[in-house]
Length: 289
Ligand SMILES: Nc1ncnc2c1ncn2[C@@H]1O[C@H](COP(=O)(O)OP(=O)(O)OP(=O)(O)O)[C@@H](O)[C@H]1O
Ligand SMILES: [Mg+2]
Image (cartoon, rainbow, N blue to C red; front, side, top):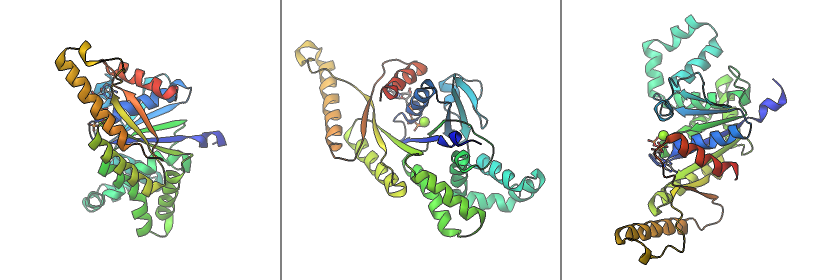
């Protein structure tokens, strides 16, 4: 492994449910791929969103190609844990003996932090030189939403406090070091441009900051740029009402963000139903950033 491979960048995209996390994560990943970086877009969980969204044949643990320079994969906690355990234990039958028996299975189920730790272990594995090679310049994670995201980030801390010695303790601390290193790991919180969602997103950003020390970029997604020249009398009254209500909502959201230390970026509402067109258009917002 040469030193340039250790420049891998990890980007987490989170936010409340339904705000556009997956779409924005894909756009960020695509912007990196277009900039010449070999990029992996990772979704977490058991069911792929991107498979249907991008009309792909199959999205699973093993990366598949989405576009030139851009692969996509779906990682679940148990799959990451399995790969890690196999890497440690090496022998498949020994792995089965321990991880696929009733007792250890229920242990995994009652210790969700283990599953979360395995996901973070996989995400950071290349930088820690553990496990199979993942020679990507950039990994973009379409991560969990709010509460689950904070639980994910806090998993290594809890585990490091519980386990002081041995390889598990060392690896847990190494994972956490990468999450805390803003040169390696960055965070985006996606929000709708409305007051309450913004207040909740700021809370999430605060939680991420308290856990990792990072200052996430807040992305105001589905922002409607309303030209100042658009005066009411030029519009049908119902549409005029919609425009002024939207403008008011967006302005009150922006007011909540007028504090220093919160990097904010507006992402426009793309008026199309074609998923790739949305992603491709949003990606341009990151290329020119
Ligand atoms: N800027 C945008 N302009 C237009 N449509 C968008 C934009 N961002 C997201 N969408 C659309 O909004 C819908 C929800 O987006 P998405 O599935 O990415 O949200 P999510 O936060 O990942 O949802 P979930 O919490 O269910 O995972 C999708 O149909 C997507 O195409
Ligand atoms: Mg999603």
